[in-house]
Image 1 (cartoon, helix red, strand yellow):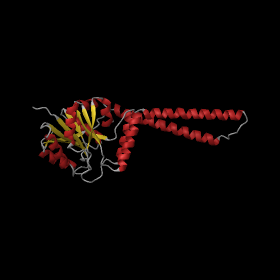
Image 2 (cartoon, rainbow, N blue to C red):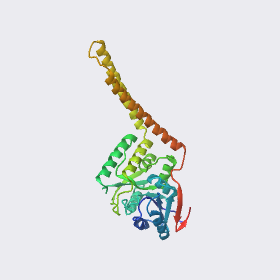
Image 3 (cartoon, helix red, strand yellow):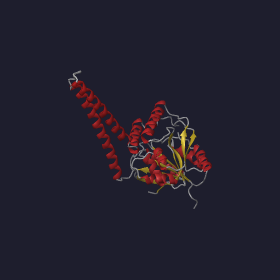
Image 4 (tube, helix red, strand yellow):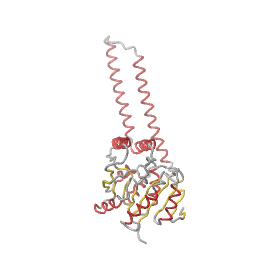
Amino acid sequence: MDKMLISVVSPVYRAENLLPKLVKRISEELEAITPHYEIILVEDSSPDRSWEIMQDLAKQYPKLKVVKLARNFGQQYALAAGLSLAQGEWVATMDCDLQDDPTELVKMYRFAMETGCDGVLASRSERQDDWLKKTASKQFYKLLSYLTDSKIDPSIANFYLCKAKVFKAIEAMGDYYRYLPVMIRWVGFDIRVLEINHAAREDGLKSSYSFKKRLKLAYETILSFSEKPLRIMISLGLTLSGIAFALGLVLTVSYLFGGFKVPGWASLFIALSVYSGIIISTLGLVGVYVGKTFETVKRRPTFIINRIVQNGEDII
C-alpha cells in the first residue's frame, strides 16, 4: 500500500453552504500533487446542518474522513482532533470558510519541496477582513509577542503545511491549552513563511468566530504561554512601594522641620485603595494561573470524538 503523502485537516462550524465547494476544491488541488491524500473535516458541534452534509460528502469522496465531536470544544481543539487522525507525511491545516484558498496548497507544497524546510506558514498578504478585525488582531499579536518574548506575525493564522513530525512534537508538549501559531514557533524546526492570497468569505456571512470567542482565545493564550503578567504585577508593586516610601520620607522630613502638615485621611485613603486594588488583582491573577495548572494536571482530554465516518460507514 502506497504511503499517505498529504493530510488536510479543517475544523467545521456553521459552514453548511461552503462544505461541498470546500471538499471539491481541496480534492482538485491535491490531485495535482498526488493521489495519496486524505481530507479530514472535524465538526465541532455546529448548530446547522454541517454534519448531515459532511456525511453525504463522505459517500461521494472516498478520501474524505468526517469527524463529529461529542460537544463544542473550540477551533484549536477541533484541529487537535483532526491532527490526531492524520496519517500523511505532510499535514495541512486550514479554516473551512474558503478564506484559506485551497489553490495555495500546491504553492505551499512546492515551496516546501524547493526549500527543503519542515513546514510552511501561510502569510495573508492582503487580509479580506473588516478594519476592526484586522486592527484588533494586529494589537493582540503585538501584545502576545511582548508577553511571550517572541515575534509573532499577525498575518499568519491557521493555514499551515508541515511535516507530520512538527505536529507530533506539538502533541508531545502535552499542553491543555492550545494555540498553534505559538506552539509551532516553540517546537522549532525549519519553518518558513510564504505569502498567499487571502479570499473573502464566499457565502457572504460573517465569521462564526465572534469577538467574544476571540477575546477568550487571546486571554487564554496569554495566560497559558506567558508568566510575564505576573512579573509585570511584581514590577508594578515594587514601583508603587518605592513611590510610597519616597512620599513617606518627604512627609516625614516636612513634619520634622515644621513644613506643611498633611491631615492624613485623604492620602491614606488613596494609598489604601491603590494597594488594595493591586493586591486583589495580583491574587486574582495568581488564582487564574493556579486554576489553569489544575486543569492541566487533571489530564482530561482536550477533545472527545463521537463519530468518524468514511465511505458512508462508521469507523467509530
